[in-house]
Amino acid sequence: MMQLADFEFVQLTQDTDILPFLSEDEDLNNFLIEDAKNYSADLMAVTYLFIDKEKQQTVAYFSLLNDKVAYDPRYKTIWGRINRRIHNSKRRRSYPSAKIGRLAVSKEYACNGLGSQILYLIKSYLVNNPKLGCRFITVDAYAKATDFYRKNDFEYFTMTDTLDATRLMYFDLKPFKKELESEQ
Image 1 (cartoon, rainbow, N blue to C red):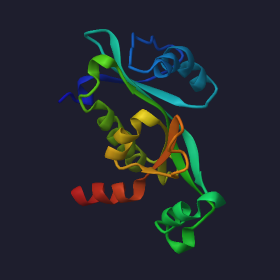
Image 2 (image 1 turned 60 degrees about the vertical axis):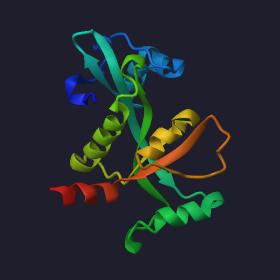
Image 3 (image 1 turned 90 degrees about the vertical axis):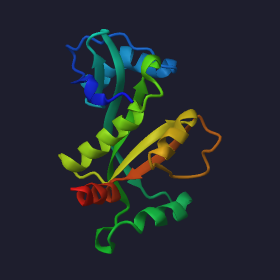
Image 4 (image 1 turned 30 degrees about the horizontal axis):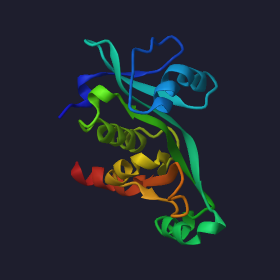
């Protein structure tokens, strides 16, 4: 299995030369090439790249931005499930989260576990290097990617979007943090 550590990890800046990248999804390809720098310049999202220096290509990338998990009266059952995870004195109408705006692995490197390693990296970073409070990770997962996120312990916010092009999903970081602490 390939390891992320085999590749150079770079935060995209305005000066970064974006090396060739081709995934199965044209929208993900276009975001990296056409939009990622603009999102960064406008302080809307930060994109990180994994580069294969030998082949001079982008292996994978992901973008992160701020989000929140907020109460919606249409989904009381799901909100109850989320809220029960929070200590009574800390319960609110919304909770801080980080959103995965985009996550893609190039065709050449797909199906090697890199996507799951990226999710683990994101989770670990958010609990081990906190700069802001962040309880959840959210993602508007493409319908074809929901199995991947479910395999990585993400849950659906609702079942009303089952026929939509994307599904809103979340991951609770607190149990993950406890798991990491118990491993030490």
